[in-house]
Length: 167
Image (cartoon, rainbow, N blue to C red):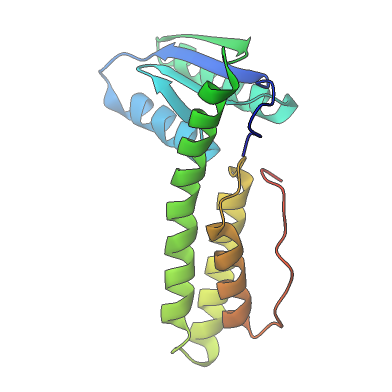
């Protein structure tokens, strides 16, 4: 999370508009943005903390928008205040917390499985955990809970929580 009293960091923003019809490109673009874990700032305006990877991701989406006969532009910006950035970070962390809670719940439910079914559940949940971590820029406490639940399901010893995000 963004520290209280710290200066806002740089964000990469995508301002875009996609035609309503046909709907399939619009849906594909929305799914791609969701996969990246963007913060919804406004109608047709999304953002991610700026780094080379996130900038490239939003540039790809901008290309997809243009290919769908829409308009898009990528911007680098800073929130006007640390409070505004904390609010965005909080929204993003809350969205990831829901995803991590779902993984932890599935891991707990899967503990009753045996043999191959359990191994399949472990592989699937590890993959899902990895996908969520890739879009997790502000790790919530639920991240550690989900990691531990999947490790327990796999029969691994308890580990120290891994810090950092969007690896």
